[in-house]
Length: 421
Image (cartoon, rainbow, N blue to C red):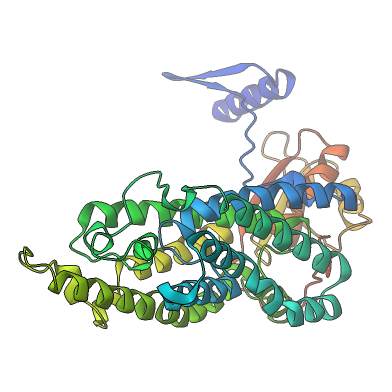
């Protein structure tokens, strides 16, 4: 009986003094507000005007255009989606241009940049039409704006003298090959993949790939949240994700991996081997030549395909998928439990939301302090809709306790939005 009285006194103290501390044996407890709900970029899920969506898309496109030059083209990592096909084609075409073609180095660079950054836009026209018909006008508009702006930003940077040989860390110019190429072909030496014996540059390349995968995931997440996609294969990924309710990041990852396997052959293995052969011929004519550098023996070898550049691109793709899944959990479901004395009002606020469709269930419970009967409000919802549910709950009860737990599996029906909300 004495123990019950002690519990009641503590309970009454907490209820009457919600902002004060409670002293137990050897321990002091202070009532603390915790809020660790982890939806990234929650602000972007709110309704916004088309003008604001276009501005965000353009800013992301400019950022993407800049990092694509220094984290993709210059270091030999492949971009994702159809962009990789354009990049591989550009590398092969400029390698095949002979010295006696009459095409100057500056014109060759212009051809390289034009194909590298813009060819995939023309390859994507059928997908633009597909996205317009299957997904929506705004989605296609934002996607087209992003691709055009990012491509022309990268193309513009590529016209700056010597920018193609600028590296933040490492050196990817393959100097032992470069010094044995003709002056006309020296600038193409970076097309040749690294070898695994080049430890320092390999580590630098992996650092590039990790940072690029992370930054690309951020760009994709932001554009996807506001209602578009940052890549043309994202159109297929978005459509298939909506159709099957599967992870948007994983679908894009599988598509990217398939394209990369082919692009590396076209853009690295073939042109790299051709350039190594040219350098080997020049080196063999040098009467003062010492032992042949290892890289000059690797033309058409499997090592040239399974190079650090190839692995770095795969690593970048894996990082992209993992981070995108965290930043943009499109179909992640959670169980929301709300403990409050105003359960009926909260149920009405959540169920009557004009933007979401969330089923609500009430479970009978008993309060631990006063022993009063109350209902626990529960709902299964999309993870990205939880901020809206919390907002509705706080309109009714600012002190309600809200618990959010992830649902691993489900078997039943749930309403999913076609648009952002």
